[in-house]
Length: 321
Length: 277
Image 1 (tube, one colour):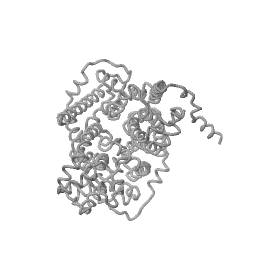
Image 2 (tube, one colour):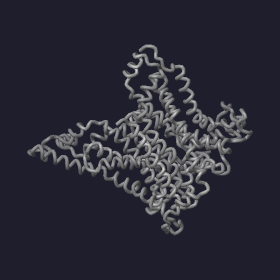
Image 3 (cartoon, one colour):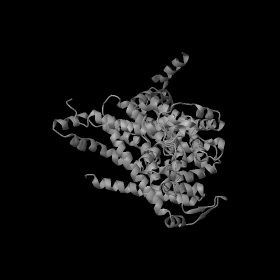
Image 4 (tube, rainbow over the protein chains, first blue to last red):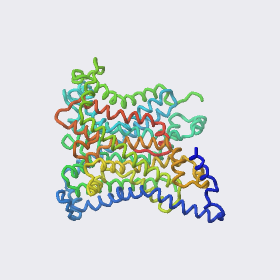
């Protein structure tokens, strides 16, 4: 009771004497200054955190890529471009690069394809679609480790349900798992990645579809547009903007996604699913060649930034002046 | 509205059901497998409907102190990450949506870029910072790394929730003499609570599921989190599928339940344009 009265008093104009008797313009600039300093104060922890743990590492990984680090003594030795030379001379460069491309392209095609279809479904106002939407969103939160576990279990050569089906139609030999075959392993991890990634595309497309004004659809129908025309000229047009942004985000996150492949195949069999992040991880945590790992990371980042810039240039050229 | 000439509800249901099966079957299969006794688990071809169910694998896990420790560590790391991340995140979101000051735009762009920056590119340097700080193989070191991963995402999502609260409300409080901090705690924070809660859940889920940093930083058995602990469980020679399916189910259940609780706010966040996959 007493506390509430005290609060009420403090909130009355009399309790804020700084405001009284000041000309309007002084009051305004005073508030502005005070706001600025308060704003900076509130954001300070976040800025410091990002400077130390994101900005500094960006420069540090760039610096490290020109060094050889002795893991036992922590000594760093400048080696110039030697790490990059080693990447280019590496016998597995083409395999890893090719695997990365296959992994990324097929994952993206699958995620965008299924994501679009799913978004069009859940956007229909039919009974039960809310439940379907919830189910389709689940992969978004399921731990990748659990995904890896049930994927491996379903693909187990002797007791896996998917392997058994593939064996019964003759696609696999008895007791054989797709994970034991180079192409089967790649297909399996890509499928796992599509499972995990399409809900993100679905929900983003769904959000965009929710923004399509109903009047436009009705107007098109009144004008006699076919279903296909309505889809082509209204739905697709509305999804184009978000697609442009999402392709870049998904590209970055797919190329650099480490967990699924590592937890399902560890890059095997015989390097058939080894993509760029696995290479980085093995150089760093397997052989403790931090400089080499950093060079691989910088290389990957450079390629991704180049893709991003190219994307921007193409978009700008496409956009009407 | 006259005869909708789209693909028709039956086709829509058929496609939706196919997709739901694609998503739901693996999850369901994990749960079913975790309840099957050995005799049902190891048959070829596998049986869709087991004739008997058992809780034996769950009992084994509960009797296994290492498994309990994994859950305890993941809970500690997830909760601490959420607390730190949300404290810094709400303050920052309040700042960028309420105040004008030089450098704000640069900060927002920086946050957006770090939101896109992949962990696999930065983990080497972050590992070295954590090692200089002497935090290798500690839960605190891992908490720090999870904050790095989740903070830009949390900030971005919180920002969209804070933008939804009209500025007039806090301006009225300021004019009445309330301090900025007081306005933040007594007016903005309660109004943004549903949004904050859903961001908290997502930060917790990201931390709970995180594997890369855990595998890089943690070496000793009693510091392992769930993903790391299970990953080593399956590379061992003897693969105990029953227990593995049980622990997979137990690792998935909490995050699915949390997600169902905040789904509504999550969808709101998506509609205002902030998601991370």
